[in-house]
Amino acid sequence: MNRDKPRSSGRRQAMTDERIHKTTQKLLSLVEELSTLQAAEVELDGKPKRSYQKFSAQSAAAAVEETTKPYDTQTEGLTPLALKKKKAALIKKYQHLQAELQSLINQQQAETAEASQSYKMSAHLLGQTIKIPKPKDPTLFDFLDNLPEGQQQSVIETYGGNYEEYQINGTKPAEIRSIAEGVNVKATERKLIDALCLLLHTSSNNTNEERGDYYTGNQEPELVKYPVLVGKQKAPRLSFTLYEIAKAYHGKDAIGGFDLENTRKTLEDLSAKSFLIRYERKTYPTTEDAKNKRNKKGQQLQYIKEIVETYEPLVRVIRSSLEEYYEGEATPERTTEILVQLSPIFRDQINSYFIRIPQDLARRTHIAHGNKPPSKEALRLRDYCLAHIAKKKYTFELNLETLCELCANDTKPGQRQRWYRIRERVDEALRTCTRLGLITDVANGTNATGGAKFIFTLAKDWAAHTSEALSLEDYTTTDE
Image 1 (spheres, rainbow, N blue to C red):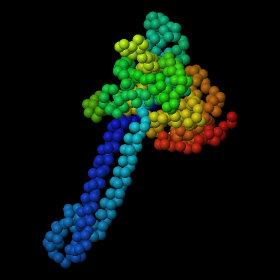
Image 2: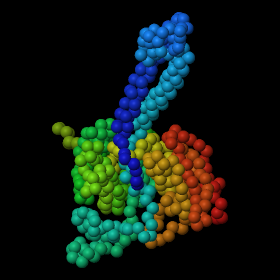
Image 3: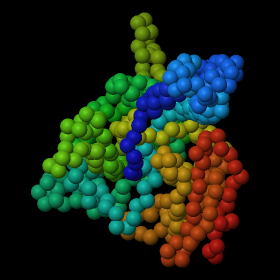
Image 4: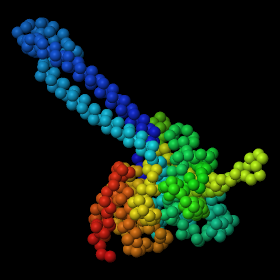
């Protein structure tokens, strides 16, 4: 996912505060200037006409002497008409600055409210959940040579290969040809990823970006070896009870036995899966570093692009229970406390490249989907819209077939998606995202080959936006 030079949320709020301070100072300066003009206007009204006319019967020396008796250096030699015009210009400028200050204050309040009612998700992680594998895209078979040695051995042995043969002859298991890039998971597992991001936010230092424990969880993070250019990255560690993760997963406080078991099973399923994760990360030098680092042509360094390639689980369950032994007590106190280790992608560049997610998104999505668990198609379309909003792109176009491929994403490399089989589920996903407030309008069009395409308009203030659900059938001109 390409993006402009990022700004951290803390830096953005600091810039807003600074702009408010500067605008306030300008307003105070204007008030003083207007007061001076007001005094000058009163004094001019009490003088005879000859005393402020530029040309009079007085001698040139007397005229010069008269004009060197100003009320203020800014009102020197002004006639009542000129004074009136200057005052009107200052009042107009004052009103403009007043409106700008109010806008900045509203922005500051919105940023504060957004930060307190939302959590951050790394845009790198979100980007993995919306990837659409194409028949000719590289798979794990192609990327195996680029993985660290430990991961290479794990992959080969997991799929029935021989690591020694791979080292000697380069022999790879045929099964890994079907493993495409991205985090393609069930709807229940995608919901669990949101819940883990929420718990990572609430249990971490999420305010001070300068500290080393920023978004690392409530346990000591693990240093994980990543590709050579990226180096070691912190893998967050979280400790929580099954009840806590179930609340975040279901988006409600009333949790029953079925909810707990459902959450436990989903966590087990997700932790048992590994994913081929590949993305670009950009790092931007400071102004000083950019000036000091130049190429042979003398051009300054703009940014460094690194490629992350790894095959690993998103979640590792390290401990699923805890027993505490107390003196004089024969039976330990047992609690269902879970310790998990998350992939570094959960926090990679989360200070500068992230998406703000409302803390009650699980509940909102459930309601928008007709008060039932959201489908995989609805969650993938929702994520695709969120990714565009994060890049401040509020319109995008999709061909009908591409839209269906995006929502379903259950093809294997080398197979072509039969999009017409999932039209009803895609239509339902569209209605869900519209009720959620993400999509405000869908316009139909025609692509270069004459097929149907759709132009989506997204809401900037989607978290508070509601609108009537749209139906894909209202915008398509193709026959079933």
